[in-house]
Length: 213
Image (cartoon, rainbow, N blue to C red; front, side, top):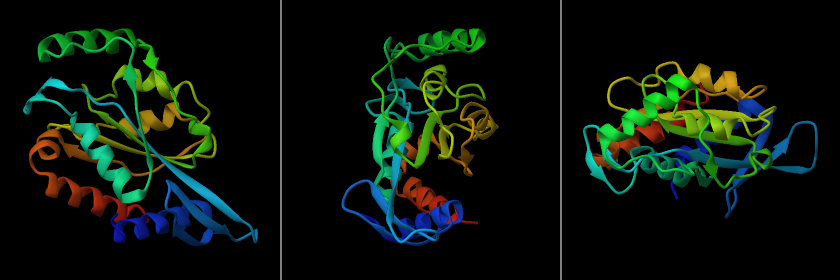
């Protein structure tokens, strides 16, 4: 596990939770001592993501999605638990067919059913990842977000893209995750995630270090 970025994440958690000390546990938990209590409180980290495999723009046919790769890096650097948002009905593997379906869902503001769930309410810091599809999150991400109570949570977005960056999706996350504190997001190109792993990880590490700014 990498140590330096975790320490920076700890500083970020200090700013959000008013804590005076934190240490890394052997599981996806961050133990924090609060100012107003002598008892240790556990701040748990979750990395939730939606990702698409098959034929993708600019990277061809891929076995692991662009966002999935970045999500694993974040989980590795923070000790967070991974959870993938998977639609019950898979998107077509072929690129053009996939975007046709996704565009129709976006136009209709659909909420496609998703498989499984995770108890977000049991976590304190949630990193949320998704590909940028036409300036928005894929609709299954909304399905997942609308299932949960986000009050008191810290939600930190990240996305993959091929030139459009976050496109204001941070505000969309804040609009859905009522009562959550939304941190500054990260955008990584899919081509970087797939073909330049060292560069992608450096971007992740640098971002984690800046979260306290």
